[in-house]
Image (cartoon, rainbow, N blue to C red; front, side, top):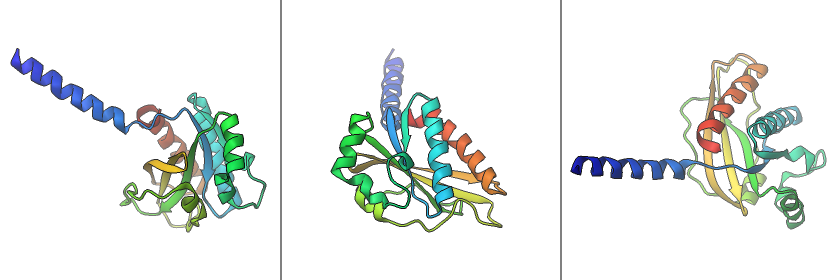
Amino acid sequence: MRGLITLFFLLSIGNTYAQKDQIQLKNALVIGQLDKPEDRFSIEVNVTELFNSYGIKALPALNVLKFGSSPDLLATDSVKTALTAKGIDTYVVVTVRGYDRNFKASDRKDDLITTLNAGSLFPIYRDEVTSVTFEFLFFRNGQMFASDILKCSNVGSRDGVIKKLRKGIEKRLKKKWR
């Protein structure tokens, strides 16, 4: 009997920690932090489409910003108010972290304005690169509350990166983000 109680206690603690790792997305504004407009468009549209297919109300930042405008406008009060009226309170910033498999999730806790003002160093795909690592930063109330890394290996083209990214996001949505 004592062993059963101990086992139950350990399982309940493990379950509690597993639930804390869940991001629990209900809605999101997807921001692709990439220099090339076609890369931004691809990332934002694909991520938004996947979020919507899993019941997460999502909107790409391209629908909010005018072409060529600065992404730090997304942190202004007027845009936040308009997005809140549409039911969006979570911002998801997607960026390419690099072309290596050794990256780990960031432990920095920048605010939304600092993150939006940061530039992007990498495009989605480069020739002779077989691995691309994406970083997802999640914000609510202007503060980052979670981050995640998604590694896409064995890619040989830009389309291959997008396909691997979609598969990886689907797995994350099933296990960790919903």
